[in-house]
Image (cartoon, rainbow, N blue to C red; front, side, top):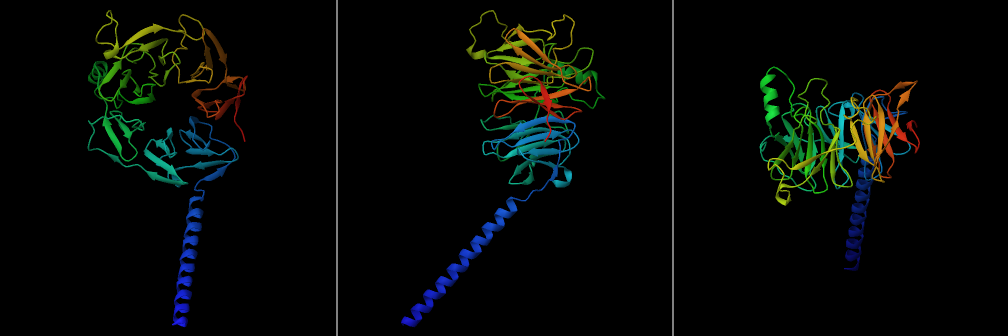
Length: 365
């Protein structure tokens, strides 16, 4: 009996040891798989950087319009393209959820990056009229059809039909053969009350509060006038609660239900206030339509003007930072404030720049 007991104990110890060995091997294998680098290590970023983002782990992400996605960890740069799993080499949006997953919106779909792996988000068309709003939603542009937008709730990528307004429908009626949609989304923004704002290509800007849509479609935010169409490419709420769109006006937004203004037209939900006007002070200048806007840690606003550099608005003071290479103005596109409050700039032809406290310097390893 003693011999049998010893044999059983030895057998149990053997199988237990084997289980631990197998478990350890699986853990090592899993760790190895998670650490695989699926991109190509490169020495510099692309020349066209149209979006910049720093995630919760302080990793920088740079999106290009034609050269894919770049990941910078403070030491090296890794490039991802279609051959590594990107749906397209054109990247326009980079966002992150509350769990730290990074999402990349390309011209051919949205993907999630997690543990060095890409996975594609599959859209659903079953509830295109069922708009909703929850605190952790991520909103994405739809590049294939400007009549729709995406809402990702952490599980499902909902394809939603855009709301309409009068000037948008009139434009469609007057341009029946145009492939463009006046409702194509250029930007999204969440305000301090949790409402989501959308800037469109032609039809103005609207707010969604979870129940209804409120449009601002005056001539300075729509593009129905003659001339080039910039669209509403940037939205921000400043420290005083004013909303800025790429226009010479700022808007003091309030909720209809809480308004006590008896002289306010019941069809509007905002005050329209003259602001800084043209940045260079000229009456007929064209520096009131900007590509991007951010607020720094001191509540100053920074604006990127396509061929006129970066402008800092500090109260009533305005300072200009020209962005030039070899004496020529660089087309600028995207401003971004990182986790430390440092300011970055993406350009169309000359890569990324970083503000050093005095000037914007080109970012190089």
